Amino acid sequence: MLYPGKLLVIILLILFVNVFAQNQRFVYEYQYIPDSANLESKKTELMYLDVMPKFSKYYSGETFKNDSIAKEILDKQMKATGKIENIAQSAASKSNTIKYTVIKDYTENKQLFITRMGRTKYNVLDNRLIQWSVHPEKNTVKGYNVQKATADFGGRKWIAWFCADIPVQDGPYKFRGLPGMILKIEDSKGSHSFTLVGIKKLSGQEIEKISPTENFVFNFGDKVDIDYHQYKQLFLESRKDPAKSLRITLHDLDKVNMNGTMVDKGVYIREREMQMKKTIKEDNNNIELDLLY
Image (cartoon, rainbow, N blue to C red; front, side):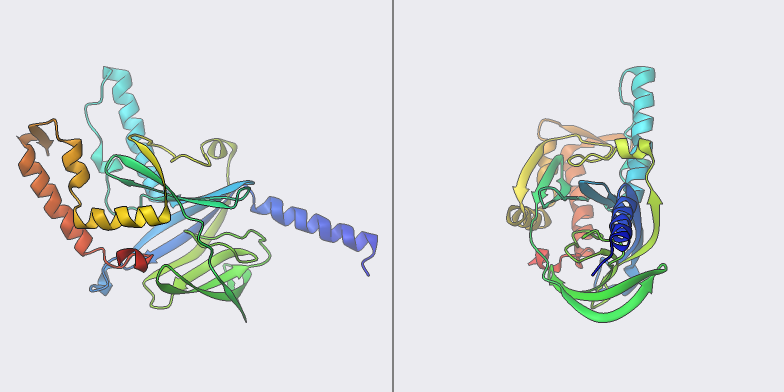
């Protein structure tokens, strides 16, 4: 039997932990091997999981920084000349950063994967549930007590470590559904891993910029709502014909600016297609491996 004083302490503790988890940025180090034939191709990127009262938003910190710099440059150009003279590709178009965003809506238990193909932004509804097995093993991550859990997801076997002291059923990427925040998770082959490196309280200015439905900086182009199965079909088609959207975008043009020189559209498309096919060939170890077949 709980005495009123002890019950009050427990209630206050629960409220404190829930408030602690809100308006927080969980920063993860994401390490991944994009090319399974080249284990030296491992990349590292800092990813942000911003946890709000009603939703969370997962995205690349580097992409956000690059896009913000590019937008600032473009805004200055528009203010000074009334037109955009330079796309500032050095900031906005770096290919070594992750472009997608994952939004988990807590109130509707809905998950969106936001990505682009060409000029089209796809809001992919992905409500697949992960079936977790919780194990008795305990450990610590960044000083937090964690417990082991395992699951199959996206064609991989995953080992997760979650913290019940942070009672938010969330984690990096699409991982969710455990009775506590996932602080570390990796696949059984060591191709993809996420490890918490820090937690930061979001400022009021940062909170204002976090939308539950939109990207942070650039929202150009068409927007299409699709489900996961439709996205998988489009994803496979884009790998087979990566220049399709480029041909559609440039269909009215004869010449294209290529590194400061106007070249024939066909030459430009062939050059870009070769680059894209090379990138696809070396990007064969997707985090969701079953997307590739």
